[in-house]
Image 1: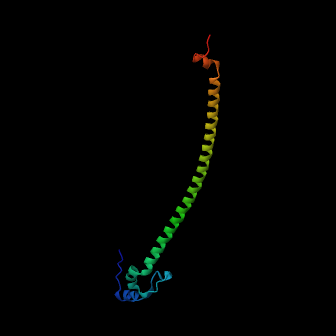
Image 2: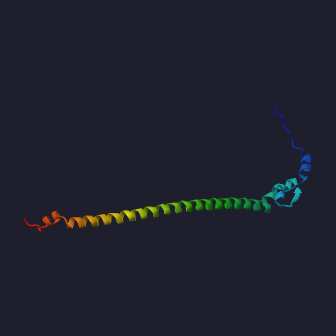
Image 3: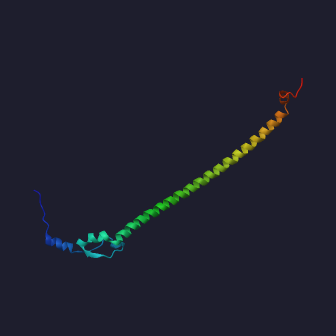
Length: 125
C-alpha cells in the first residue's frame, strides 16, 4: 500500500511564515523575510548578480594570468631561438668567408698553372 501524505494547510502556513535570511547574506545581502518569499527575492537579489560577476571576474583574471605566463615562456623561447639563429648566421658567414678565400686561392693557383696557359694556347711546343 502506498501511503499518501496530505498537505496540512495550517502547518504549511506556519512554515511559510518562518523568517529567513537570503542565502547570500554572507556575501552582503541584508534581506530578511518569509520563507515562502525567499525564492522570489533570490530571483532578483542584487547580491546574486554581484557574486556571479565576481566569479566571472576571478575566472577572467586567472585567464589573463595564464596568458601572461604563457607569453613570458614564449618570449624566453623566442630569445633562445634568436640567440641560436644569430650563432648559426655567424657560423655561416665564417664558412662563406673561408670558402671565398679558398676559391680566390684556387683561382690564383689555376691562373698561374702551366695547364691553364696550355688550355688557352699560351704555351707553345
